[in-house]
Amino acid sequence: MAEKIATRNAYGMALAELANQYPEVVCFDADLAGATMSKFFLEAHPDRFFDMGIAEANMQGVAAGMAACGYKPFTNTFAMFAAGRSWEQVRNTICYPGLNVKVVGSHGGISVGEDGATHQCIEDFAIMRVIPGMTVLCPCDAHEMRLAVEALINYDGPAYMRLGRLAVETVTDAIPGYKFELGKGAQLRDGKDVTIIANGMMVQMALEAANMLEAEGISARIIDMHTIKPLDTEIIKKAAEETGAIVVSEEHNIIGGLGAAVAEYCCENCPVPVVRHGVNDVFGRSGKAPLALKAFGLTAEVIAEKAKQALGMKK
Image (cartoon, rainbow, N blue to C red; front, side, top):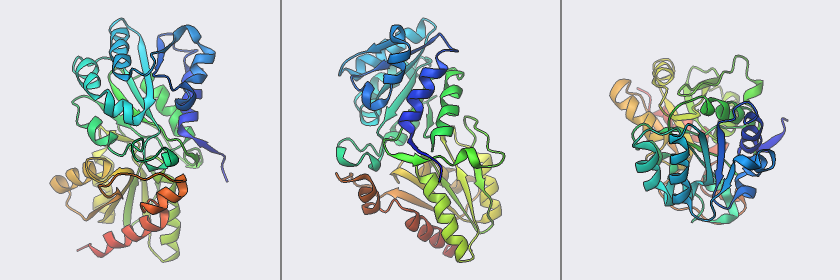
């Protein structure tokens, strides 16, 4: 089994390392460097690191000013504070003028575990993707995260990226022909009966679900949709036409996130059954991460059930 590493750790190490090549990259944190893993940047580049204290809105505003001066700021805090508390500043100060700030939200989703419902952000994809011009990402593993960080450094414009707290298996580095590109999904496994589209840690669960389905004679295609906006409609259309049924799995409210984006596109362009799998419009609960995920049905077994549900809806 591949080594398990949290995407927050992979992000912190990648940003610190890549900053050696990109002197214009600067890093901001809101008093959470040890949790967001921006501490790696602080250790490597203390002169380019700014701890703004517990003042997330101010952090986004200062980062916007730095971007206006030609720097490439990455702002770091928990997803709940990045997408929630400082949303107005992200919208009006960063996105409205189209400034080159990367807003990074760590500790997204139910897998935050013991931090509980107030910190288990399950709305960030929805409220960030609705902002005009905002790119929204959720990489699934350490390998993909490193590629995403470099892609964001070289992308000129505002972006939001979610990081996870829980250590997850690295899978994308073992996929033949895997390629990371902003705005493009990656097919990790072919299949003809149903397509499972996922992001974040649900990608690993989707691959596990595909193995379960294969044992029952069901062929499932797996697509890693690391970029929620802009959405890769080409890969979705192809999957809809070739498999005829889609399941979308995400560690997010089923309202407004990746599942909603896929359903919106399919409804207008390639109508097929789309089953959304995620948190069913409720708040999270405190508990050990694996138990919390199971309590909300965020497991490979439930993804497999959803795939069979989608198959049953085929014409």
